[in-house]
Amino acid sequence: MPHFQAHLHDEAATAALGVSLAHAMAPGLVIYLHGDLGAGKTALTRALLHAAGHVGTVKSPTYTLSEPYAITLAGQAISVIHYDLYRMGSPEEFLDAGFREDFNGSNICIVEWPEKADGVLPPADLDVNLSVAGAGRDVELRASTPAGHSCLQRLKFAPNL
Image (cartoon, rainbow, N blue to C red; front, side, top):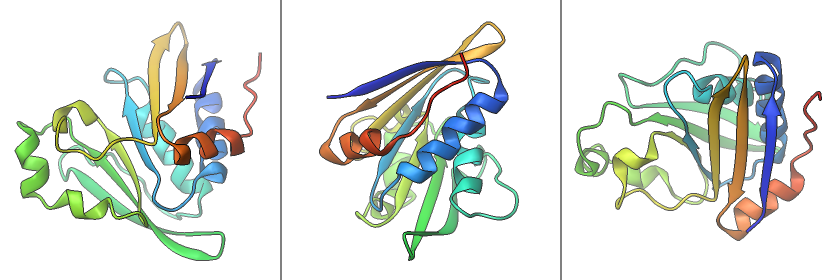
């Protein structure tokens, strides 16, 4: 499946990628965010949500595990649900919380630390890998499904070189 790689020189480039992703999203998309603490997963999500029309604070759902946001995408009301599974002790906690029901083909689900729910989490359409590289970040987006492939085809992003 297709993929995209870039070096993001600074926080502004990470935010610009979030804006580009917001414009490439479609209902039902499942995005996994991979990377160490401080790699920029929440910063990317914050920029994406603001670009998608959310007004207000976007906080990391580290303690709540999930935060829903209402946006309008192509004239349609959509929920974007941001998960941070870092503090989950087992994949069963994901099921016990009822999160699987959110992955319904309508909501856009963005999941930080998806490996914490390995085996019970629905598959990703798009995997985003972020890693600290000097003062910036390296990023790779890899599509795993036709929906992810379509998202990458719509992505209009050119980092400042």
